[in-house]
Image (tube, rainbow, N blue to C red):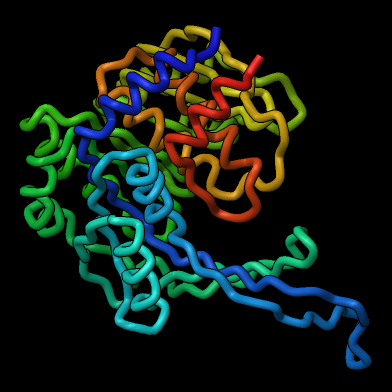
Length: 329
């Protein structure tokens, strides 16, 4: 089963009424596009002749712009520095119709610069401060975000382990969201022990899911789906668990029980950067619009299938999604 064109069109119509609050690690993705035809005489490295630079929202900001690109309204809460990168990030977010609500912090705006040569990534340069620079007081942040939460249909935590998303922040915001009937979703980065419970949706990849379940697992070995889903539910009491399996698609679980695995929708893959952000935004939008988990997952799978065919961090428009779904076998 996949999602039909008619179902997709109807879902996109319902999404237009939804408002999503995205909380997390905000970044600016910087692309340096160029060519290399010679090797440097100073070292055995290519000399890059820069043709142009481009800037797009990254991290939690990419989740927010994916929400607006599919027709919903989005508010982004995170740290954006008072620097040149922050100024540029605010500008591109404004162009993508994303409202911003700043959370206090003392760090520089996080920037990921990628050098692209003839549609291939040569290297990535990261600019960021230590995690403590991006930490916020959970109670203060939840209080500042209370009005945005009250107006939202769903809250998404987009955690890139940069310091902003903490167990305390998740707990404080979830309490307010629960009081207002909001869906709460988390895309986790369990580089630290995580303590949270009672969320509606969790979207880890295979490695992250194994970590959250407390299971040692290595890539290339069979993935213990049933045990992972059961243990995560026992530990975190999550309603829905969607594990991204890369080229193997999505594993769906409800209340700790495996429902099914759906295959990937992508026909061509140019770049997987940000595909998880697109999938997260799409599945939350579909759930907020009243769809069940399986339909929401097929919708998200199709949205991710569009963006992986693009080079660089990208979003999906309703017209692209409809065209993609209508041409699927």
